[in-house]
Image (cartoon, rainbow, N blue to C red; front, top):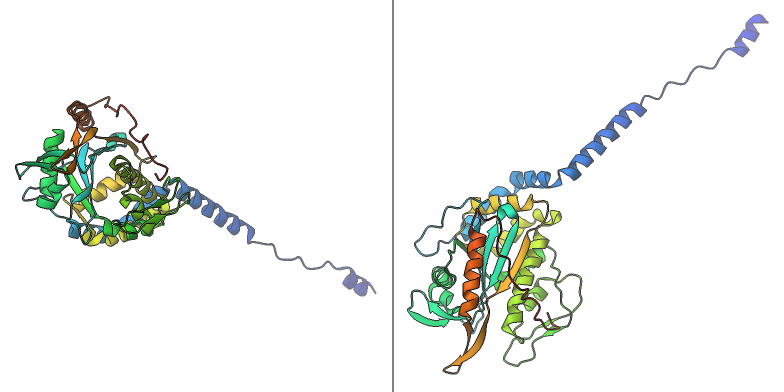
Length: 346
C-alpha cells in the first residue's frame, strides 16, 4: 500500500522553461535601435544608397548632357563657393525658332543655403554680344546658343556667368511625372482662348499637378510677361522642393535619364553630384529670393520690346555682386517682392 500511495502522490514533471523571451527581446531592441538610427540618419543612408547604386549611372547621363559654351572651358568652382548659373528654358515649337523663352540668372550661396533667382524678361531690349546689334535678349540663344546668351547676359548685368543649364520644355512633362507631380498655387482655371495659340487647359485648386498640367502652367501666355515669368520661378521652386523630398531622391537618376537630350550644361558631372549631395544634406531646403528686372514696354518698327530701367539695372548689378562675394557677411536682398502682381490664373 505504501508503494501505491507513493505512486499516487508523486509530483508532476516540471514543464521546460521558456527560453524564447530573452532572444526575442534582444532582437526587438536591435530592430528598434536600427529603426531609430535609420530615422536619425535617414539622409545619410539615402546618400549612401545613391552612391552605391545610382551614382555611376547619373554621372554617365550627365556626361552625355555636358556641352561647353563655345570653345571656353567652364570655370573651376568649389561646390561650397558662391557661383552663378544662367537657367535657360527653351520652348521650341514646330513653327518657332529655338529662342530662350525663360531666362533666369541665378546665384547660389551653398554655405548660406540661399539662392537668388533673377528673371530677365525675354523681350528685354539690349545689345546682343557677338552680333553687334540691339534686339530682344531671347534672340541671343537662337543665333549663338548658350555662348551668346551667356555673353549677352554677362554684359547686361556686369557680373560673371559661371555656368549655364538649358532644358527644352519638351522634356518637362515626363520629368515632373517622374517625381509624382508638383504643387502649384493655381487659383483659377488656366485656358488659352486665342485661336492663334495651342489649346491649353489647367484646372484650378488641385493638390498636385502632373507633367502635362505643369507644362501648361509655364507655357500659358495670355496674360502679362511679368506673370508668365513669375510662374516660371514658382514652378522652379516647386519642382526643387519636390525633388529634394527623401522619397524622391532615388528617382533622380530617372529624372536625369528622362531629361536626356533635352538638357545641356557646361557643369561637369562631379560638380553637379557633389553640389546636389551637399544641398540635400542641409537641414532645410534653400531659401529662395526672387526678383525681376524692371522696365517699360515700347514699340519699335511695329515690334514690342521691353526697355529696362537703367536705375534698376544699377541696383541689380550691386545686389548680384554682394551675392557673389564669398566674404560678404550681409548680402543685399531684393528690395521688393515682385510676385505681388498676379492674375487669378496664377
